[in-house]
Length: 310
Image (cartoon, rainbow, N blue to C red):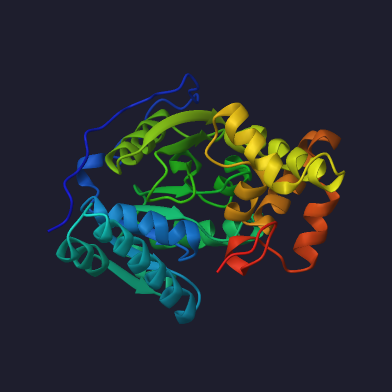
């Protein structure tokens, strides 16, 4: 049997769009099937968490091999919970069985909510949202997991901008407790409330951000990572001492270089470039970050970043 829904812990922010309500919009109790676009690190994590909380999930990616990798990651993640006696093998098997994989976006037609977790490129996201706008029912909320891109620009690709919202999960999704709810220019208040409620029903705590570059988390996190990389490149300290100093000195679980490896250096670079374009030179990517990505050293996912991984 699936794990029971966790007690909700609502943390509503202060920002509210001008559109007050959306008559006929689906409420939390009517959401049974969640569509997830993307089977990568974030997509498969979101699918796992949603299925763990009793939802039926349709996970879509563009190639069968990507879906296979996504399911393999979910099974590996669940095996760790089983090994720690956090769930039984039967519960893990039920979670996997609750997720259907597909390469056809049209298969999300019956979803009651869709969360997009495709690559961090505006053109790709706009194409996905334009297609979803034609596929799903007109009262379905479309959420994006983007970490830096404009919710308003993504929503503009649809005829339902009032039903488009940011649901920015943290990596790794099954472990991290937080979800950032991002409010676009035309996102309705009811949509924002539903986004908080869905995230909380998935066992997460939420905070809210306006649709500004980087939102709350990456606006602050990316320059922290960049400065850690610069300090290493300029010989301030060894990479291990930089990470150790930040962990012991500021009580964070990972230092900037270790965290960059876990996030993916290519993702850090893309986020840094987006913020640099929007906010100027204080967000200029560190030279060593660009050099590592050009060399194919992307962090944990490639086996080599600032550290080596099995």
